[in-house]
Length: 233
Image 1 (tube, rainbow, N blue to C red):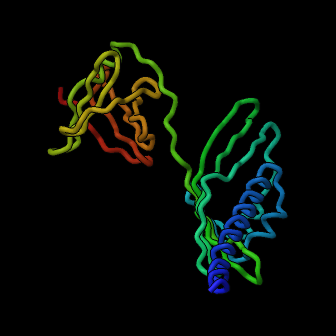
Image 2: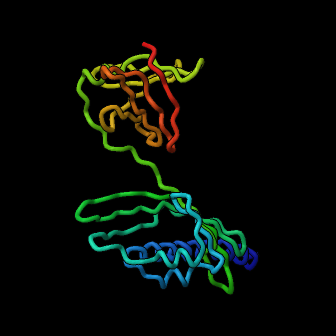
Image 3: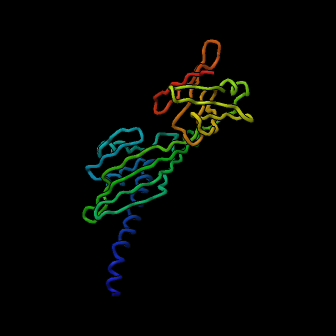
């Protein structure tokens, strides 16, 4: 019975170790980005490797290796692998992580985060990376304070269709928006005439004005596509 229990524990322990190995391999790849060190990439990527980056571009092994170059003069940074999870299915593993990037770009500090999902294949006892897909995590932009008169100009009832409306109100020096009869939520300004909803940074409300400077409606823009709202009152 003791022997059976011991044997039953071996696969789980092996998988735990493999997950640590995979994370270390991924962190080594991230560490190699800024200096443009190709060695970890050529050692880890399978020749059949395919990736889709945050811009939707698909690249193969040769294309990715060619892109591994030192950051240009004036730029430096680090990428830390966090929120690591991996599931192992025999000789195949799927991992997901948060890549936390901090960059110094000509003296300015930049911060971005990416969610990456990877597929691994174990060959001859070694794990090779065969595919990745990366998305850039959206972040709320910095907001600015607006003059009261400008906020008041946005207030009103807007319509995008017979059964789809949006109402903007001003309360205690803050802007609120509500879709149809839903509860109002606070909206903020990225710049004048460009508003966003905190927690939903994929969408912007871009206001339109007539020759007199009066608001006539706004464009609800997401992924470069617009839903047109016309101001009714």
